Image 1 (cartoon, rainbow, N blue to C red):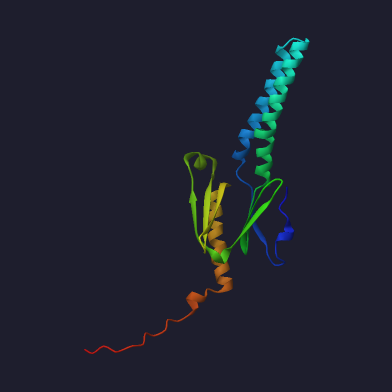
Image 2: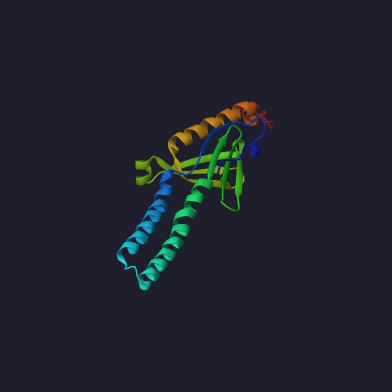
Length: 183
């Protein structure tokens, strides 16, 4: 599930394209392995009679259900989640069947906060919360190399401000007019 390039403008360049950290795939893979092991174990242990065949089918049906809902589906969600940083905006896309895409222009970002638990620090991932003008915020969960991503985001915001020109910094303050003080 690649990120579609047609959502980018003509002059826009992708600087960084990420999926959530690979730790999000560990549990689904373990579920798939346990389901497979359960079916194989029951198939080996039960006798090749009608009752044994019914037992294998029941365990197989439960294992298939768990494998699909707790194994395959989370893997599809993980692969369908995109964090894309361009030189103009941040694009967040997720969804497998129904898609949701959110754009945060760099010139509207107010603050970005990185947080890491102990496990996140060990794995090199973390959560990045991006606040923008208008009380909008986006939370990027399980971002790999979150410290470098936050530094890159800061550089992108500063570069965007330099290119667009920060109108607030260019204006000279107007002199205060009013009554002059006597000494």
